[in-house]
Amino acid sequence: MDKFFDYFDSRHRESILNKPAGEDGPVITISRQTGCDARQVAATIVDNLNKKAGTSKWKWVDKDIIYDIAKELNTDTQRVENFYKGIELSNMSEMIMAFSGGFVSDLRVKKAIKDVILSICKEGYIVLVGRGGVSIARDIDDALHVRLIAPFYWRVENVMKKKAMDIEAAEEYVVDTDEKRFNLITTFLDKKQINIDYLFDTTLNRQSFNIEETADIIAGMFEKKVGRQKAERKKTSQIF
Image (cartoon, rainbow, N blue to C red; front, side):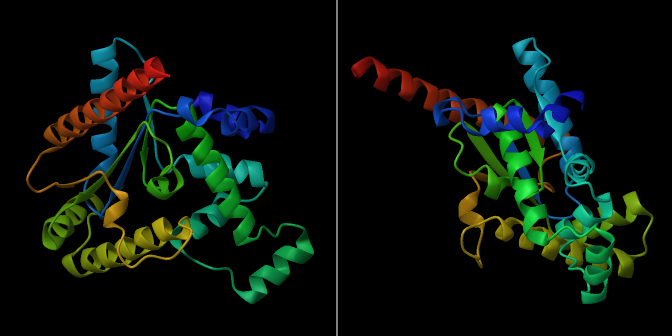
């Protein structure tokens, strides 16, 4: 994660955000319903792409970015975590934080999240799990946007195993987390959307494919999409 500290140097981040759009990426964003093992899928995709290219430049990022964003804002990680979870500060909490000099508005948290994640995606060779990435990186050409889904009770059973929850707690967790993740994606869109299916290049059912198969499919689709786009750009540049 050492390289990500560069994104909190304002000069470095500004240079990344202002570089020509044609140089952005490549990036893969993975949005997921709760209980779809997206982190394991992302790690496997990175391994596959690095091995195939004989490199180590591909990385994957998820929740850990919260801690670095909190450092930039000089606030606690829970403040950023609360924004991601859709938890607004109470009026009393806002007053206490304002008087203590520790108040950080939702608008400022949102801007910090967007700027940091966009700079990471624009620099490229990143597989980004969640964090509203499909909305933030939607204008990057060399990108593949993936959504992982699965039947409700398949996901509930997965959560029960991994978090040692009973079925009622797992059901509540899945429903609640799904809602928050949907809201986070729409938070970074220009207009609120009821349906977000149009944002994704592909949607995969995790019940149908194991982690390795899912990763292979995503890596293959990424290579085909980005490869085609690069060939089209090269052809266009030769014409002009």
